[in-house]
Image (cartoon, rainbow, N blue to C red; front, side, top):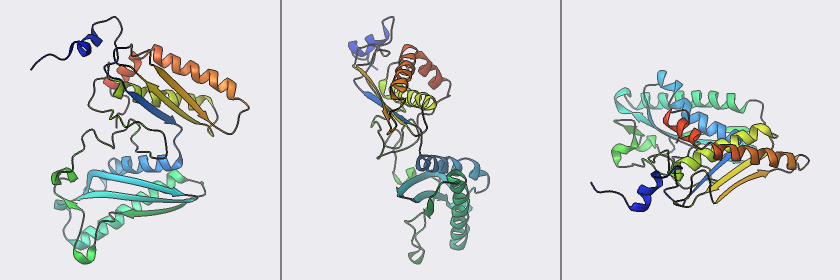
Length: 266
């Protein structure tokens, strides 16, 4: 094993930690109902539901599409073959899975005026005997491996209609690596600002670093307040600036949250 480059080793050799990459982090808040249904469905399947349905594997993908007042959820859930007796057992397990996901989703939707539709394992073709069955409950056994890939956002979501970073947060050090620190910090800033302002305001945060510069002194930290209500906008701007500055002045808090497992990285 050889040493790293002089510039990257040098980011640890000053009184302040320096950024080891020119990169950026992105976060937003608050979550929409669509966001919450998507995130909480995956957490439900890989959490509470595991106690009820051991047939369900850990490889779970949830995709939501909302058009006007119709919310369609597509769920792909690998099923573990050793817990499935036959084709009828598989079909009944999928029906049970649909019912439990629907109950959970409707609890989240609550009184919102939304029509909910759910599809599960749409790649199945019962007539041809095609079922989403795996040995391990992971599609990884078939060579589908994305350890720090597209799904690993710090908020647990892939959001093509929201601002997001293409940086993977996982697999990086929590001290100087901007791909981890700024993505998590952006999310934390957005959430704190959202608590201060109206729930109708969307907060978008983007932080950009330069390699070799102090982690707490980014090239740019942008906090956008997206709203049609401008009545309190000047007050909200000052509060947002104060919150962002506080997180940057105390960037070590982000490192502490990561190392103590108090924030998610994917």
